[in-house]
Length: 135
Image (cartoon, rainbow, N blue to C red; front, side, top):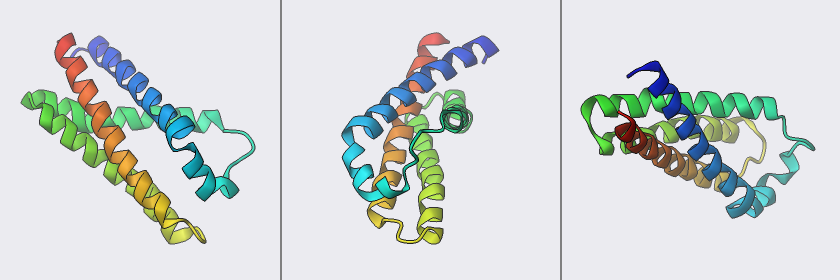
């Protein structure tokens, strides 16, 4: 895949990821996260850390889910590998917190890991579809 195509695909996936995650965190599940984790919230979001996370996370989806699926011409593979990427990465965060943070809510672990699966699978699917239109 050409570098310019890869960059365009990355931007598309990043936009989809940001849109979905911001709606989830800011609207759909806001009350849930506030109820369970409000005591941990910082007064101000550290946007530099959030930007680095989003940038790296989407790059990982592109590298580990979308590109291999494009090589095999498999929309199902993009969705499945994207979902697994979300499961593994969100599980790393959630299960580490469950193991190390006092009173970390199990409900957060379950919901957040499921969100990671849905979000990453959806974004990888969108990336695959976008790539097939661009190539």
